[in-house]
Structure formats: C-alpha cells, structure tokens
Image (cartoon, rainbow, N blue to C red; front, side, top):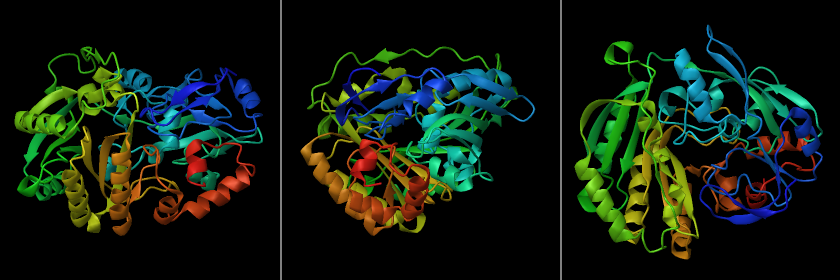
Length: 439
C-alpha cells in the first residue's frame, strides 16, 4: 500500500490524502480486503467523493483482462478494471458495441456497474445494469459471490448502483449489441425555448439516442433554448469506406489550472450564444467517438474550473413534474447568473432495478459549477426545488448532498442498508460519500 497522497474525483473537490492499493490478481484482492476500511476505485471519473477513503483505496486498473467472448451471443466477460475505451476497441471490429455508455470512455466496467450509469439511450435501453448478465463480487469476509438478476438477486440489485459499498466487483459478463459500423447518423435540431426542447425530446423518444445541450443562462422567451442531438447507428450502406475504421481525433490538452474568474456569467453567456447560433442543423454521419465522447478530445478539461475544482449537479425529475420543475430550476440559474459551462438535458425511461440507481422516468438535468461558496448556496436552493417535485440527485456526480435530502429522495435506501449490513456488517467497504450520507 502506498503512502497517503492527495486524491480526488474528476471534479477535483474534495481533495484528501488517501493510501492506494494496486492489486494485480484475485489473490492480491483477497489480501486487500483484510484492510479495516477501503473503497474500490476505477479510473477516478466519479466526480465527487464516491471513490475516496482515508483508510485505503483499492484500484482496479491492473485487473483489466477480457476473459471470454461469444461472437454468436455478443456476451463478453471481462475484469472490471477494463476501460470502456478498450472494451469498444475490442468489440467494434467484431461488430458489437456496449449497450449503454456515459459521456466519457475513460471509465472502467466496474465503475459503470457501481454507478449503474445511464446514457443518451436511457429512454429505450435503461441503465447499464440491465445488460449485465452476471458478476462476481468479492465481499468483506473474503468470499466471492456470484450475482445475477436470478441468482443472489438482492445483492445484485444492491451492487448495481451501490457505489462500491457491497464489495469489490472482480469481473462481469456484459451483453453487447450488434452494430454494422462505427458510425452514427446524427440529426441536429434547434429549440428556441424550454417547451420546444422538451417537445423535441419527446418526439425523439423513438430514436435510439437523444441528448440536448441547454443554455442555462438564457432568459425570458429564450429560457431553456437548446440544441438536440439524436442519432441511430449507421448501416453499412451509409458508409463508403471501411465501416469500422475511425480516423484518430485530434486532442487538446488543458496545460494549467485556469484562474477562477475565467468562467463567469459573461464568458459563458458569450459561449452559449455562439454555440447556439453556430449549431449545424441537419443530418450528418459522424463516428461514435465524436457523438458519445466529445469532451474526451480535451484532455484535462476539469482544469478549466481552476484549482478549487468544480461540482457537478445532476438531478432527475419525474415526467409529470418536469415542465414546472425544469422551468423553476432554469429561472433560478439564469436569475443568479450562475456560470454552468456544461449543461445537458436528457429524457429518461423507467426506473432501474438497482436499489440506489439514479434515473426516474422523466428528465435529467446536469450542470457544472465552480466550487465556491456562492454556488454551494445556490445548489441548496436547487435542492429544495428538486425535493418539492419528487426528484433526486446522482450519487456518481455528487460531492455535497446532505444525508437528510438523500433519505428523502431514495425510497429504497432501507432495503439497500439491510443488504449491506448482511454482507458487510462492520461497513469495511466505505467512502467519504457513504459517511457523508450516513449510508
């Protein structure tokens, strides 16, 4: 185990001293769980404190092998330190693609299960756990539990979305989806208001993928103006060249921490106005990397928020409440002049089986805020709106939610806690997030 050194999530807030364990085998994993307190960690792309523990942090990055693949069924079995980028690189030439992906390919399979991630296709495909055939979980007593929806089902439901608090996922079998190419047929639409944006999201529910960039600083009749990107996997007949060859995308590096004043109401408003005006409305064929992972082309983009870091605020609102709640949230944001540089709106489908899984059937809004006192006070006001309309916040993005709000918005918490006590009565697997939320 390494000596304690500063560690954070992708938001760089909070930043605390943690000791890292880097196992390379199952035997190493078993020895690691002899620690009195630890938390699994993938590639550190959870935004807040979900993968931080001042006792020990158990890295999965050296356990990243693909163990088997069935080309007839599309089921791949891999160790859970495997990066999504590497899973895609393996699957695409074989005519398959992961069933659900988040906004970055630099996450691990284990992290995707622990957060039960959702993507631009949640309205049709659900969360990632829906496509997990089975997994093997190393629990606090050193035993390995085989879990699936029909075997150890309660533990499976607690582990999918359980933020690493039930044990260390060793490997998983994932159902991939067949594709004919590495490209998507994207249609870009412009919406002049929140009502127009929601109408287009509803009209796009028959598309496999749909997501909206939303201008959270627009006011008046332009409140909630958006650009909607909806897409389908392109067919072989739509691609003239090799259907699975994608040209490398140029990357840029943010070389230093930007000054805290860089992202402000005026700079973000100017960017939003330009982005909205210059959106290329229409249909285009683009590769999967540009559609799913646009920010991955900017390495270290989290440094744009400065040394103090940033907090992502992602809420989901039930469908019936969404028109009023989203308007209230956007009015609060635009009125405060808060400079959320990245604002995303998506339509979600039915609630997942995971006991702590995030999505509800409705709309999810994701916002980024520089970590400062004014924004923390603003987020308390947003919390009240979310609570009043029956919504909740995403654990994988959270760094500051209160235990009271958490208990009020996750109705299956008691069921999760009962399973966790049964499998880990001393709470050996714990994190700063679980301590903060009194999980």
